[in-house]
Every structure is written in C-alpha cells, then in structure tokens.
Amino acid sequence: MNISGNLNVIGYGLSAIGPGIGVGIVFAAFINGVARQPEARGQLQGIAFIGFALSEALAILGLVLAFALGG
Image 1: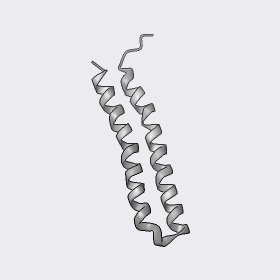
Image 2 (image 1 turned 180 degrees about the vertical axis):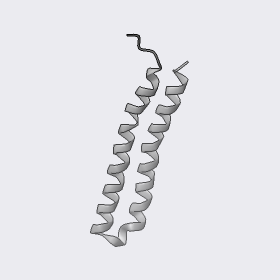
Image 3 (image 1 turned 90 degrees about the vertical axis):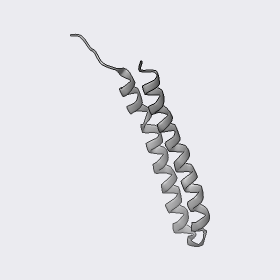
C-alpha cells in the first residue's frame, strides 16, 4: 500500500480549526456583551471585528505557508 499526496493540505485543514474556534469565541463574547449592555454595542462591535480580522489573518497565513512550503 503506497500513500501519495501532499500533507500540506492536511496541515492547513488542521490549522484552520484554531481560527474557526477563535472567530466563534469572539462573536460569542460580542453577543454576550451586547445582550448584557446594549448601549455598548458600538464599542464592542469595533473590538469584535478587530478580533475577527486577527483570527482570520492566522488562517490566511496558514494557507499561504501551505502553498509556499508545498513546493
């Protein structure tokens, strides 16, 4: 039995789990904060989008590295 293929795709799939969980945590905290204090929605929304962007930047970096190191 010969296994062939590129393990970078598997590595990227596994590394995409972290940012996916991170985005879920960021928006769960945002919804929780707005539910507790609706007047702070404007402030919390900006912070939530910054957290989302930072989490997604990690996923994009993982994708770039998967292609760059794939050869």
